[in-house]
Length: 243
Image (cartoon, rainbow, N blue to C red; front, side):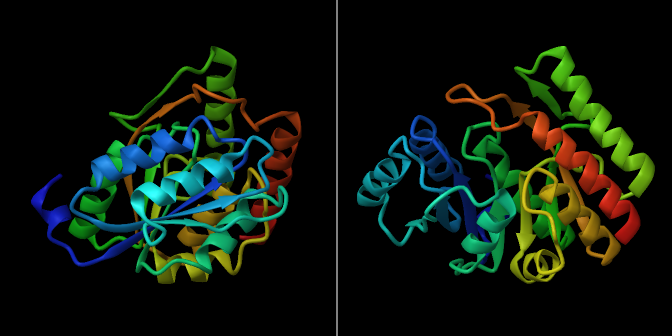
C-alpha cells in the first residue's frame, strides 16, 4: 500500500451484507486483512438469517481475528439491501464506511486505492466504477453486460448524476456523508445504490471514482432477477420525478 494510505489515522468500518455466503465470507475476510495490513478497520457482517450457516462461519472467524475486528450483527430474515446498510451503520465505530458485496465480486485489493484516492482528494465518497479506462467486468455473458450497460446509459440520460457507474455497490463514504444521504433514501433493494449516488450528487457531495474489475460470483447464486429489473425501472422513474 502507498505510504499515504499507510500513515493515516482514520478508522474504516466495512459493512458486508450477507445471505447464503458461507462459501465466500471466509475468503473475503482473509483478503481484507491481507490488503489492509497497515489500516485501522473493522468488518461488520449483517446477515439476514442465512439458512446455509453463514453466521456460524463468521463466528469462527471472530475466534481467529477477534470480535473487535469482526462484528456479527444479524437480522432474522431478508429485509432488503438498503436496510442492511442502515442496520450496519448503527454499529460502526469508524469515521469512514466501506460498503461492499460478500460474494467476491468486489475484490479487497482495490481498498487501498479507495483510501488513497480519498486522502489525496478529500472526497466525501469514492466509488468503484466498471465504466472508465482500467475498469471492467469479468464472468458475465453478453446479455448481462448489455443489460447493466443499458441500465447505466438510461440512468445517465435521464438523471445526469455525474458518475459513470450508478448501480455499483463498492464504495467508501465519510461516515457523516453516508448518514446524511441514507436518511433521505427511500429505496430498499437493487435500486438503493443508484438512489444513494444520485442523492449524493444532488446534495453537492464531492465524489471521486476508482476503476475496478467486477468479477461475477464463483460460489452461490445471483440474487438479481426479473423482479429486480422491474424495481430498477420503477426506481429510475421515481428519481426522475423527485430529484
